[in-house]
Amino acid sequence: PFYRQTIAQPQQYYRDSLSITYSIKVADRLFLRLDYRDSIMNQIIQSPVNSDKSYKYSDLGFILLKEAVEKITDSSFDRWLDANFYAPLSLNTMGFKPWTKYPSGTIMPTEDDHEWRKQLVHGYVHDQAAAMMGGVSGHAGLFGNANDATIVMQMLLQKGSYGGQRFIKQTTIREFCKAPFADAGNHRGIGFDKPPLHPVKDGPVCGEGSSKSFGHSGFTGTYVWADPGNMLVYTFLSNRVYPLAENKKLSQMNIRTRIHSVAYKAVRSAQKPNLTSYPRNVNPYVLLINNSKMGLLFNSWR
Image (cartoon, rainbow, N blue to C red; front, side, top):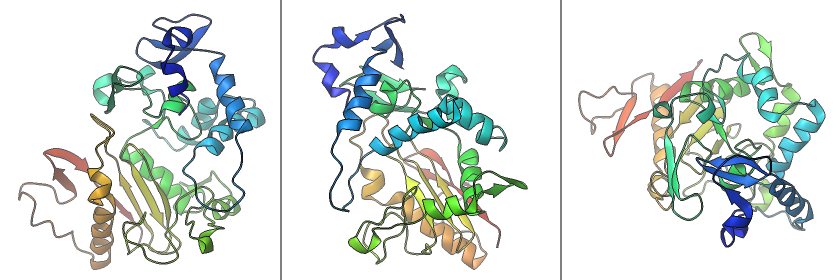
């Protein structure tokens, strides 16, 4: 948590207006010293690498991934992704720093941050490390609606092709989906999460998912999962951390994977899911949870 190192002396690291020295915008009226980005990179590079093959929740590799992409492509990470993926895929909402592009009313808020930013994080990335990188990073900062996220996952499900155009090599997709340390109990793949080799309670995917499936569950309440074995893509977007990140009900109640299970059963039975416990006037593919509308997208080519 790089941001915690700056809290004790905010006057040394932050200003409330843009300048040459304080030019990294981490939130509304909050600018970080430009040179602190180099401090973060140095800390990552000098951090020790685990000697064993156990799983450790860490974003450091993907933070460095952005730096590698920019060095190889000689382009900024966000512009390169937009030119090579988002624009050709006609993804109108996907991208970084939505506060620069869209009215705030079209962007979901995240946490009311009392510890660091001292404001409701709205239009800015919730992840603190990504915020300190200016909102663009390899591990966090990407915004988009459910339709755009589903198109990306459908492209990946189709081994890197979409709309007759190839975006990623098939061999790269296979490499991303490998879980080389699964035998040691680490079900994470190189690029995605994967189902455990043996069923576990409260796992990353529902029991109906095939061994070929892959996806990601995000800290703020997002979830995307592609299953080539069943030709199904599932996208779930929520702002779990609003107003406080301490809200763990989404994972405690297994909401995302339980709905995922309903999707599998609906596709396999070729019928709409049985949602008789929900109000009669609710679209069977839109659920009402705590009086908040939650979109549920199914996508199947069977």
